[in-house]
Amino acid sequence: MDHPVSSGSPKQTLPGSTRLSPGPTPPPAGQTITPWLMVVLVVVLFSGGLFGYDQGVISGALHGIKARFSLSPLIVEVVTSWVTLGALFGALGGGELADRLGRKRAVLIAGALFTLGSLVQSLAPDTVILVAGRLTVGAGVGVAAVAAPLYAAELAPTSLRGRFVSAYQLAITVGIFLAYLVDGWLSKSDSWRLMLGASAVPGLLLFVVALVAPESPRWLMKMNRRADAATQIQKIRPGVDFKPRLDAIETALREESGRASWGDVFRREWRRPLLIGIGLAVFQQITGINAIIYYADQIFAAAGFISQSSQTTVTTWAIGGVNVVATLIAIAYIDRLGRRKLLLAGLIGMGASLAVVGIAFRLIAKAAAGAASTGPSGAGIVTLFALVAFIICFAFSMGPVTWTVINEIFPGHIRGRAVAVATAVNWGSAFLVSQSFLSLIGAIGISWTFGLFALFCGAAWIWIFYRVPETKGQSLEQIQQLWKPEPHAPDRPIPS
Ligand code: BGC
Image (cartoon, rainbow, N blue to C red; front, top):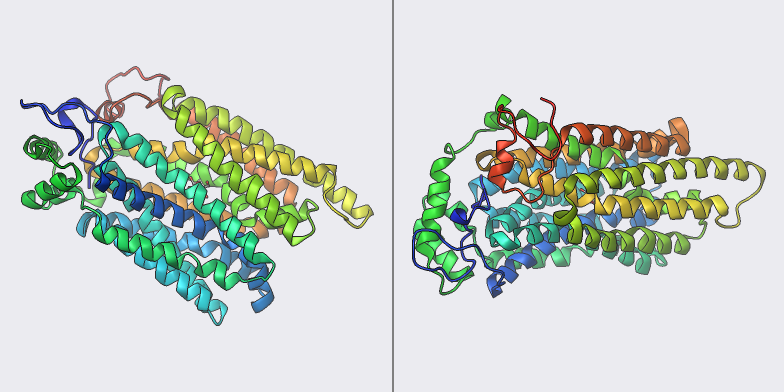
């Protein structure tokens, strides 16, 4: 499965961007967003938003769930983290669905899974059904995580593609923030069923919007449905001369060696981009973001924020709100400063703030041994600020840059499946971290747990410094050249 414009070169302009001038080469894509492109954007925003909501909501819902079902720490971890296990399988299936049934139908399926999973969770009579609902929602998250950015990339004009894909990460953070707000509103009554069930409404809306949304002309061309592809292009960009655009897609399809198999993704030729995609996916998670997103309330409780409402307030604003705002910084600077600078600077901040959290928790533990806590101590406040610093640093670096790089390093013919592999690995790592976070705290203590995340930041920094090339300002075709065995001159030398 490929993206229609794999190079960003003027020759391979995306369908439906501006009025074409006569001649064989379409002009560069324009900036106009037509009503149907708005529909595409809505699909992307709903997909990202639901992904974020379904991840973030559990933090506030846990309290009520524990009161209702009296759960062991292991089951708390299962209820929290199995959404990521579902997402892992959903991501692997998502690549296949988007290839076989089309991008639009894959998003439709994600919408249906979101709705079904939300309803199952909110009506669950016992923990088994609750976990089944978590898995179903997770599958929706995984399918959407592969299909939505792919759908965005294939339908957005070249000049807007970066922003369309970035809007997806922004929507994730808005979804997490909304989840925290909903948790805050409903926590007084401990209405966890409503918290978990609330996403059925946007899930259904996503389904309805995807139903009327256009299909990717690129996918239609791949399925030899040229007439349908022409109809879609005319729908997305009324008045545009569609023939040269379809020809450009046809040429690009011919250049790519037909339908790739899963085996092609793992070919020696593509080992380096695959390792970069997988490495970033793993490091994004093992540096601790979702341990904080999922267990924020409990971390703040340990830092001395004893009342449920104070925990919810700091989680909502210090984690959720800050995450949204700092993601805007990334969107503004990712193409100006480049991927490497953001990643390397962000990781230094993430590592330092995690180390501070680790030390602060040592002090909190010492103080707690002496007296009963009446509220956050000095060390508790330091923990709060350090976690805010961590979120800011993550949100302008490892958060959006990971997804940007994963979506730009693979050659067109293996991109869908390779992105699916990296996405599944990302969810697998998220699963491992969230599944083991509480057990890890039990085994080595909260200080060392954060210390371990800080160590992983150091490892990520070194690995990125030596292994991840700068891709800023390069067309996808140029990026592909980086993986050729010939000597090349990227921003940083890449050891072979
Ligand atoms: C990550 C998620 C994380 C979110 C936080 C995303 O890039 O993939 O796992 O929860 O950022 O903003």
